[in-house]
Amino acid sequence: MQLASSTPSPGSVAGEPAHSATHARLESEWLDPTLLADVRRHGRFDAHCLNCGGCSVACELSDESLTLPRRPLRGVLLGLKATTRASLEPWVCHDCGDCAIACPQKANPAESMRTLRRYLTGQYDFTGLSRRILRSKAWHLGALGVVFAIVLALLVVYHLYWAELTMTDFVGTALPMEHMFPKIKYFTWIVYGIPLVFLTLHAWRMQRLTMGRLGVPLRHYFMEAWMIFVQVVTQKRMRQCPAEQRRQRALELFKSEGKEAGVHLVPRRWIKHWLMAAGTMAMLVITGLFLAWFQTDAVHAWYHPQRLLGYVATACILWATTDILVRRARTPRAERRPNALAMPLLLWLTAVSGIVVHVVRVLGLELTTHYAYAAHLLITVPMVVVELPFGEWAHMIDRPLALYFHAVRLRAAAEQPSEAGLVPVHTS
Ligand code: SF4
Ligand code: SF4
Image 1 (cartoon, rainbow, N blue to C red):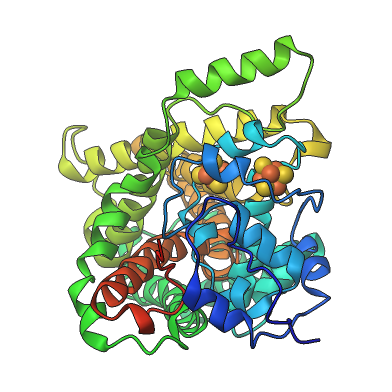
Image 2: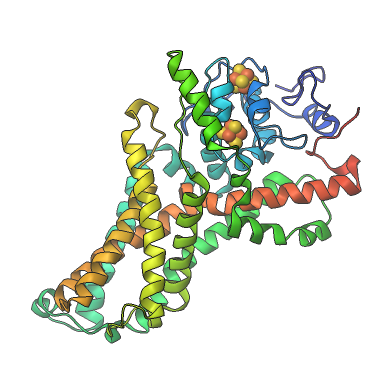
């Protein structure tokens, strides 16, 4: 069914600027009555919204160019599939929960935004695997299981056929680290290359869906390219969220009135998230580019850069993932988001198995190191190959790219407002 020109845009509310370019687009947009149901397959999405706008007033990240969370949520409720897929707002949201506290309907818009992000991740992936993995626990576990089985088979084939060990030697002899080089280096490049290829295609499709119809000149993309680097390194948008004390007071007020906001306070969110991302990136770079330096039989002094770098990166990952796991495990099952434990648990297991490999190596337990390293690979490889390109980890590129595309839209709008497409235009 086609949207009548008199239908209000999802951005229109008393007191807000008119969104002329968006409105013009909506006049020709087809409604998809299955959109809400499809989004809901990715998690919880409450449809009891009154469109009052209270959530957008409460959101510190909302401004005249990005009305979150109400506008993207409204788009879903109206069945505006193209507008929803072109929306950058869900990625600007940093999941603080202020909108859920403000919502008079207790519709938990923060949770709906989370679900919308999962839906969009599936839309950016052209293979369709992401959609299946994000909607189905069986597909998620199945994908991890298949990669696990492939790695196990490769370990056996390598030792029995390439290294030509007998079965007795395979299970009872520890070969020195050098026997793996350079093969393990190429294996690591292939393992990291798989998500790299799929994430590049994912980014390209995201650009097509969010920017494709706008025809923004290429020079604006070049002028704003620095934004990706800044967002990846600093995650500064998350720091714009308001003081935790204020949110804590609001939640306590709710509790004293016997109400539930449906959100939980996460103390020091930005630093925890930053440390986890920095530790993970550091490990990916070290093992991807400097594996022969990082992974040796020689046990250096504890202050050697090789050991210190590994300790710092592992500590960052371990602290942040333990905190996430404890909080999510304490959340009542009914309130838990789908697959809430998978990603932090895999990252936590990777860090812990890496620590075990290091400790037994330092203790000189060669055969135990051999088995511990195999276990470490069996955990790490499925995580990198499945979670990074097809799971929620894809947000590592979706967030910075969304902020970059938004900056490109703003630059284009400043130069030529009539061609700015989705960027709201003040008419008053
Ligand atoms: S969760 Fe926080 S950042 Fe996200 S829309 Fe709600 S108030 Fe805004
Ligand atoms: S505050 Fe609640 S009811 Fe009002 S627009 Fe936001 S989600 Fe809808």
